[in-house]
Image 1 (cartoon, rainbow, N blue to C red):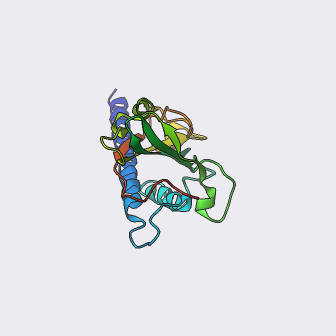
Image 2: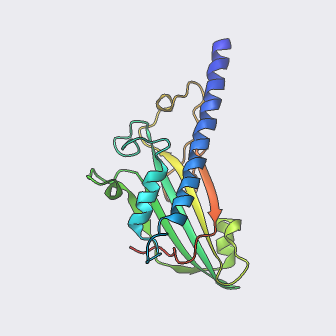
Image 3: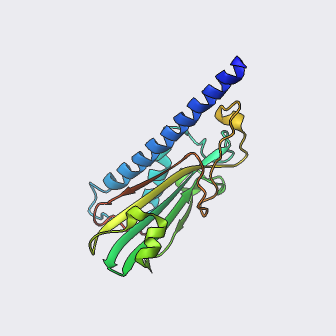
Length: 200
């Protein structure tokens, strides 16, 4: 009984630790997005900028290439960025960028190993924006918001690889799913003007 209790307490601490790492990664992600173009004349973020930021934001947990195939921990990183800009009371500009370290072949450069999807800017209604996240709804025309979603997905996963004894926490799905699991974090920020929408 006492040994089981110790394992149970150890698992709860491990869950807390991993949740904290996800939160830290998300804030690092947001900070680097805001700062990366400070010294550049062209402020608009490029897809490769985001890939580098995404890769670097996971260094507090993934060392070297451990977020990539063959996934020694049985998990990998995923992220979605939802960018919105209010055009009028009935219309928003919207862009989605999805990134993951899911299998994309073996390349020399980490940025080439990151899967991505970047949609063109399209139009959405306020109700559609609120469905994505209520905090994305803007007050004034021209206001911008960015929702960062960051989580761990599983591939070849077993709880022992993450240091769990009894508890088997629910991990998120792929980059297209709304189920982002226990080890996840969502953060809404106001991006600096001119950073978005992302270009190739």
